[in-house]
Length: 137
Image (cartoon, rainbow, N blue to C red; front, side, top):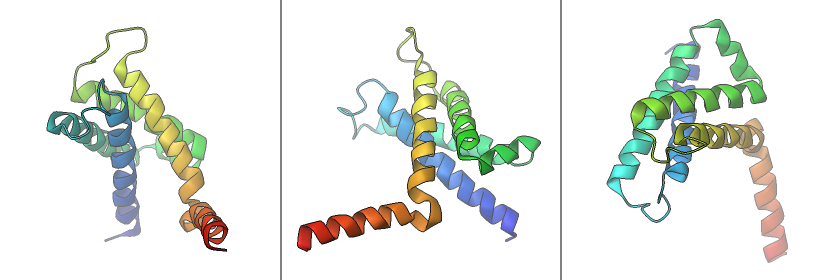
């Protein structure tokens, strides 16, 4: 498999978990219905659509935005809004529709992941080492 396709597969996986997690967070009753198969189907569908759109975007000049953490978060948020709109109807019908909420949460998850997981998750490993020494030291 070429390096480009390996990068695209990795991108798909990343763009799958962020929208799916955001969708589970933003759906009404998500935390009380965490075991609901219907909620998980919608969240997985949102993640799959967003992941596919993210991979399609790599064939365009907009793929340059993935290299900047803020551009990446913006693209992820916008693609999640589109993926959430395509995967199910809005549950809230209010001032701030569910796809917008889901997109914002997904963009924030992408931004947080860019800080925490860069450099083979060195920040997470450093925090774990600090916690371990405080607890056992």
